[in-house]
Image 1: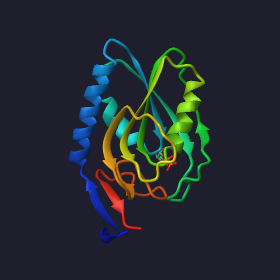
Image 2 (image 1 turned 180 degrees about the horizontal axis):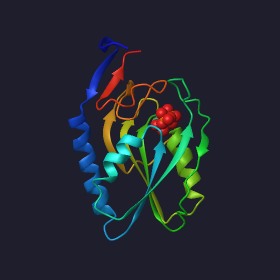
Image 3 (image 1 turned 180 degrees about the vertical axis):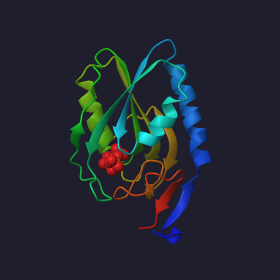
Length: 174
Ligand code: PRP
């Protein structure tokens, strides 16, 4: 891929500012308690790693591996749990951490799934909120950056598993 095929959307500095802002808000909101952070693999791994290192509250970490897109740029709408969380979240304050909410189907599915495990509270934190293709209404308590449209890569986000390692976020010119 050469540089004419993607355009810079958010720099590492833009992202870091938002991650710090979110971490401060989350730390404030959960002050006096403990939060179980559930990262959604693979896309959220970099955002989650940066976010949790800035939290000032006791935190437990777990992950789910979901899959819907495969090698496509459109959500199939069929979400699969590839690997579930291991921590018992019953009665716990749980925070889902996503890299992007696009159609919303993945996060809505995960939310319903985690609610069956009876957490005390369940909130959602996403770095990117992309409204263009939203197919289901979903409460997003913590949003880093809003995005009108476009297929984005970098900072954990991929296309066909490529570009996840980029420190900045780019729009892919498909
Ligand atoms: C991406 C992203 C979100 C989901 C958002 O995951 O990480 O989990 O899509 O899309 P939606 O709102 O339209 O459901 P993907 O299935 O591409 O897997 P990945 O995280 O391993 O890249």
